[in-house]
Image (cartoon, rainbow, N blue to C red; front, side):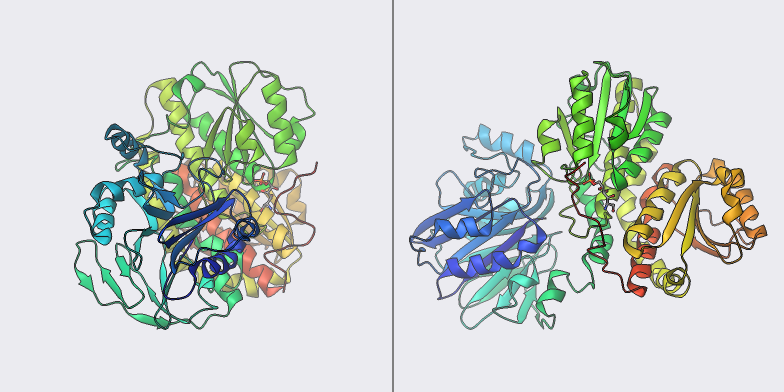
Length: 605
Ligand code: M6R
């Protein structure tokens, strides 16, 4: 997700904006920019680092004391100078920076273009500057308030105009914004680290609020335009805590960001009631006539591919093949011009995934990339791209990117089903809309218990097993990888039915077995597999969904996740396993965010 800073006061704004942006660099970004009012709008942008932006100002900074700045993590439109923020209106008098996603930007853009507005970027953000221009009649705050009534989606906005040299307008809607209070000056930031060197007193804007900030005062209005009294708070976090928003590690923060990540993945793609909108990203012609699908990926993304393959097999009549990218590259593969190859990668830079994708492409397949990073190599070389919109993932262990991949694959499965059968399963998509709230409830009801189990049981063992059947097997594989990766405990995932074919020999008294039981048609089979474990005094921690069922003969501990459509259960059951890995790793004193021998992006074979 992008970063916003703003300043209005008596000091030179530009150095303060650059300083604030540097404090947001840890979040990841692909371009940056600032706008300073003095007396006209001075805009500096770069597709690169803040240092490159600073280099643009070596000839001297504009002396204005009102400005806004932004670090961009591309969502709509590739990383480029044109797409970097701030974005202006036609007259070049209004500048806007934005975090979040404007879901209805295409229709707004069409309408505004029809009214004569000229766009210069591919971003969703630019519609805001033109809307403010459209509604401007001498009062900037009113124009912004009118503009936001047109927007659907999530947004934090900062707006300045050369006609209002002592006015900074801020809007918060599902994307955070904080106003730092100084002496005759105010700072604006999307994240607290950008404020800490200047002030420890702040107003946290609430959802729907619009603030009119001048060097003398702050006026805050709710979405109906009524003025509200803002409450100040004292920020006690140190800079490192602030980067992690108070969480001990980025991994924990990112685990907790999953409800938001899923909302972002769904934004603009799924309307109220489950209407599917994917045709802009994946044109109908692109998928017409396909007969077979190859899914290729590595690590966590491969587990998402297993999930996707299962869904496609259930929902469509396509022949589905799923393979680790590192194997796919060196195997005989049956690809033709009716093959859709889906390459899944958080980073879009994994060498094996790129190699496999290029091989499929050379053999004539149509390539669809599912990736989190706009403008990544995978995105650039694919024929079509579906972005996961999970926001930057900083911890090496992938968490929110994984569930965003699962969510994207659900949407894709429904889309391909619609193309091959003329209809799709509405329950799948309706259920998807409930997932963010259900995820949030898992943190409330289960986290303390998982922490206790991890600290008291898992942290002390050297071997564990993860069992599942059907879709639960893909989740079990992801659960075991997380535990190995950050807690350095040997873990093995197995199809529960396979246990009796050899591995049961390793089940001894006290060996922890994490099992998943969310698939109704496989539940009885799974429970009898677990009784085999219990008969050998293995210790079963069961993650299940069915509240009517008695699991006491099959498990020592049962953790119930909210009820969802069975095909969506992996989006929920992975959360307890991510938390298990996290708390086990912390109990063992491991470096959670930077586990040994691993890199965030594996760009070598
Ligand atoms: O960037 P990618 O999704 O292509 O990365 C693939 C794997 O390297 C990655 O998922 C890895 O397994 C993670 N560290 C798992 O948490």
